[in-house]
Length: 561
Image (cartoon, rainbow, N blue to C red; front, side, top):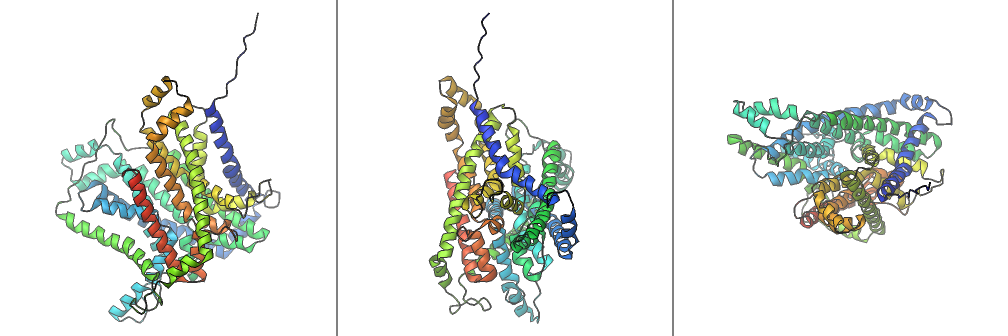
């Protein structure tokens, strides 16, 4: 008998998936696991002594308390703001809905530390514009507001993290089948009763997920606590971690590690709950056909509610950004802006200082590299998830999700500890470690966008291409890629923008020749010139608006930031 030989053919899809998994294992999973292991094996043997020592410090205990208090309060107020706004903008006949939606969503892409700077200009107890105005109007001897407080931090955190909940809730509302609400209305229920008895119960998992997202983001924030809290000696876990790292010795690193593990555990518990628990409790119903939620007629309340939303948008969105822009052309911050106090000298200084120009170039290079590499991986992952049944394809998706949900400060610290030559890879103090950090944190945003785009391309188009004799790669190149190009472009920008102005990871990973624009802005705000910091912040705001406009034009209105 002759034995038939079976030729083994290695599927390229397997190669792609294993390559992505290998990349994530090396640069994400291993560093984060090592961070955790190092916290309980600080000297090579198992012990909780590091935790006992760190958490016995009064300053650290207070920092944890401040973190939890500010995060919980931000979540409460953020949801209190986000849900009514999402409902009014998405489900009613409110005037100017498109304008309001754009304003609230764009705020999502503005660096939080820019928001901290803006409110610092308004509510500084000595020279805050709003404080000085109120003092003058009412003849007060003392300022009414003090931004350097826990409530000041909560206010700023709420102003810049409620958009996270707004976007999440808005998307959930768009998926709702209107038939249940219509049935309630036919049965005689008022719009308000329908909202509380039908809409909110159906959206419960999405509401909880939105709240958890705001909580984790606020708890892991560094820019706002460092600018608002630090001057008032109000520390959080993130600011304490940075302080311990800057000590520079082994004990400081271990102390930073234990605090970072605290944040990482909380974030991953929240991620697990929202993904695997709430994900199984999806109460939102979707019909097989395109649905359009019922628009609620506000009647006599249409104009008053439009005015109320306009006031909110003016105070929370427009006033802070205008204040930053005006500060950039103000010579003396303690005096009113007039002809004598107006100058573009700080803009000229920004354009001529080598440190700022080199930092901008570094940010452009790192963000562009992270976006391009990230979008390539995102496209491959999107195809594996949407078009194949390769076993294990959900593993890299899960790992990318974990990376995105991990606090930035934990990612940076983990990379420092593992990518400094100890395990054969030494990219510390190089731009490569920043690129990797940005990819780990922000790649999910690009991948989800591409997955969404690919889900709208019918598989029959690709099947027709393969029947005609096109290879798998040729089919991707000639059929799939052109159809999802708007999603790809949007994904590139969604990775690029937060990477460009990133602060937390850059603060830990920078070297003398790899400083970024985010770190440069923070440095000027904290130690040098607040006017130049305002110039940089204004430039970033303008850049965000320009990018949003370009993205809107390229994708023909399908995607915008």
